[in-house]
Length: 322
Image (cartoon, rainbow, N blue to C red; front, side, top):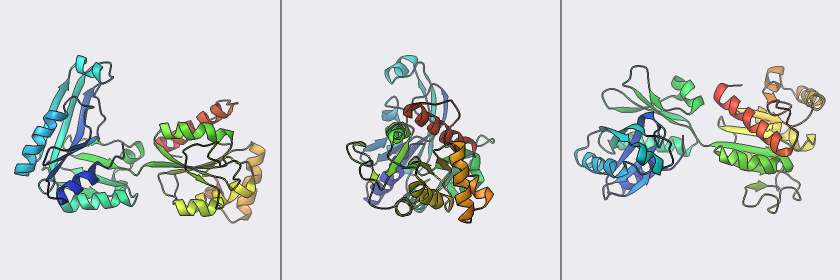
């Protein structure tokens, strides 16, 4: 799910007195331009932010949204995307999309939307659920654990209850600004992760080696990670191969609910790491959270191949669990 500021924009427009509506893709068939959960915000003066179709049906959705803003009623729209139109937006063939339009202050209350926006700002996952009666409510993500793990909005088995998954953006903290990190950072960003590179060795964590990236070389890894914040949508990967640098990061990660912890090193290196963490008071169950040696076993040799193996393993854990 894209974490664009679409609900935030709709709420701001509504509070500015413009009126606003949220359009959400709730179902797709065939090669739809945008996935389920994609959103478009529409203001009362026809301003838009976001996308539900890559441009194929936006104008029709805006027209319906303006009517919804006037009467306060929810609408369910269905559109077919022709093969010709699909090709223009980069798809091989056409399909159908179903879009739910909710006017703010009408079928979608300002209070519910404000609470949703607050949850997103706090990096707290939350489900927005619309029942057959068209009324929306916020629900605990634990009620929809499989959906949140897969980032998959959609209808429940009853075909009437729609669950919109609002997960915080994925993040990855990379400890050790080494060659593997230079390959891993762009891969991780392409996969949707915000990245942080931590290395107290300024010669490694330099702008020249990582142009335009978020670097932290002033603080030790445990302090840097605490300041950055660790949560269930964060992966921590240690690559320095130096216990003085990696261990503080691993301890910080083990004391948090990050979804993935991985550490570079051979089986022998990992065995020594396990001994140190055992002596530090961590249980065998705690230590087992660490994937070491890091990455899927694809016989990777080069820094790029190792980075690929790491991202593959992070993805597998994210989607399938540890």
